[in-house]
Image (cartoon, rainbow, N blue to C red; front, top):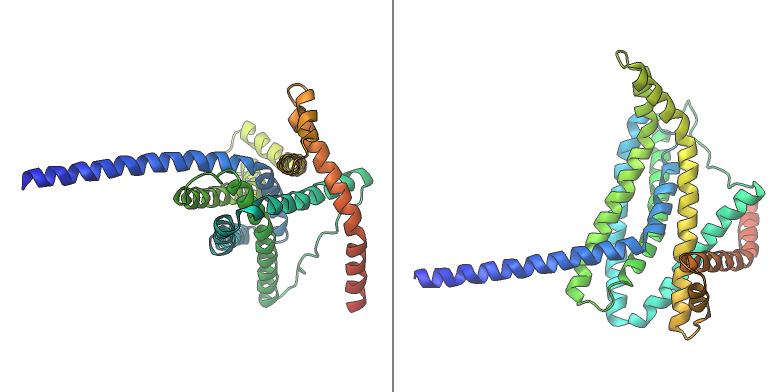
Length: 309
């Protein structure tokens, strides 16, 4: 009896050790895969705060929470199952999907660079009227949340495909666990950062105006309030550079996979930062080409929109 119990305990311990090893391996794999998508993550964190603009401070965190839940639904109900299914039944499609995502990132990145150079910026969506009724405020909030979740679906798809490309050689169980960990970790990171960014103004104002705070704390609060607009612009620049770098890197590796090794060879010719520079250049070139092709379509869509109104 005791011998059987000891044997059972030995089996349990062995299984626990094996599970710990699997978990350790999948956590390491998740970290590596998530790091490869950091450019899209930075852009996601830079883009999302614009959907919170115009709301009362008391509604900011609840709205971020709604978007977070929508992001998790996007990933676990649609993106992760679809990516795993494609990887299992049609692994050849992963590289074309990566390239499509890279072209989208390149287009987004080049469009932002074009805006900086020309001074033409996309018009911000109109804010709700100050005398809006509670029903109108609720409808405006639903519209903003839905728009943010739709944008998140595109970015989540890119993040998951990039992450999955780093685990193609792993067993399916590892892929499921690692991709799920990436989905949870990236969502927590992005919307945690967004929550901090959105509330930094309020925190700075609280430091600057709270009675009893030392002058140093008041000065810190005023500094936070003054620097937040510049920080958001800086974050946007970093996100754009990261997008172009990630997109160019994907394109470079995809070209090599299809037998075109010249960009990788150019990267090796430049010491230290060759890969980064060549990736940025490829991202800009690809974004410029897609932007040129997209101009007629965008103009046509804009014309039809004006005619409809």
